[in-house]
Length: 187
Image (cartoon, rainbow, N blue to C red; front, side, top):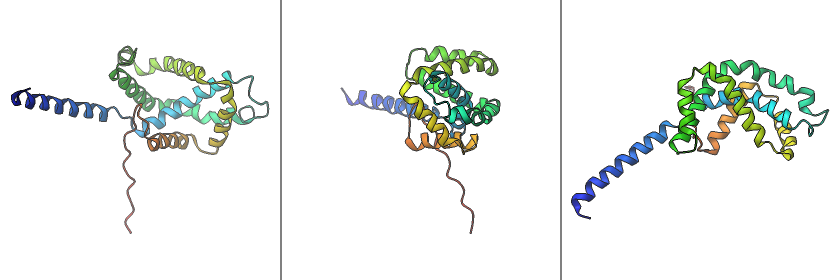
């Protein structure tokens, strides 16, 4: 390869790398949107777990005794959390489409074409089915234990805590945008 060809090739490679890095940087999800997605999805996940684990949960366990009361604030917060959950879903779908995953572009097109509120029942059913398919019988006790451990926290704190853990774990599908450091008070 001649020097005349190397320079343009390097320039194109640098441009492609910069463009890819910019696209990856833009594909992150805001911690607040992830928190909203958690709050929004909790009642759906709870219902899926209750159904999938119906014959494996204790009649005097947490879900039977206090589960409905625990999940009630999440249900009440779903409408408020929907816009952030929807932004999270769109970011997730855009990343799948960019990665070339099957159906990613179709889902992105559908999400873009339909009004947000029209998508809610579809999202609820799809997310509930996906969660139910992932629940294995031997995990029912762990799910119940996890819910009981989270139960003292207000619903907003549960969403924020899970978003923080995901950010801390540096998960990449999609990555969580780095949250700004809290401002320190002047002494």
